[in-house]
Image (cartoon, rainbow, N blue to C red; front, side, top):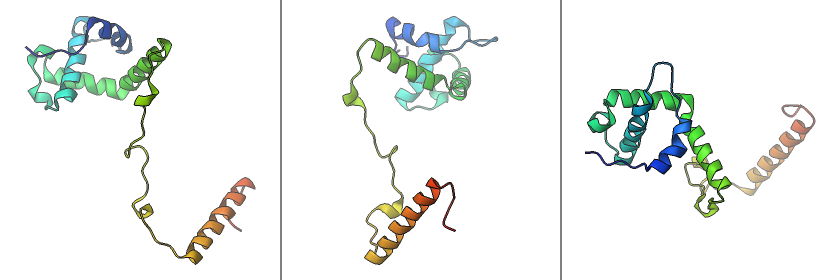
Length: 140
């Protein structure tokens, strides 16, 4: 038997964000399929290794793709954040920016530039800003 992660209380928060199309899934299978997606990413296993308790792996994979393409996971995340804020359970100490968000170009790390080149670059940047303020795209 596969271990499930969601409590009934968790499911009450998640279920409204999962759409039910004209042809399925049946509401009784919706939780199993969502748990299957959780299993896949929690375990790191392949879709084909998914325990049968979650249904056919192809069905769970197809449902995941539909939810991904429809933006369901982003809506779910936004909803959970809003719910936590409404309950005053937000903890901003958990918010962080890592290197996958704020990345510098590879040439920005330790590049050595002469003072003359640096001065020219700064002047070009200022000229570009001035041109943008005047409604032009570049120096004339």
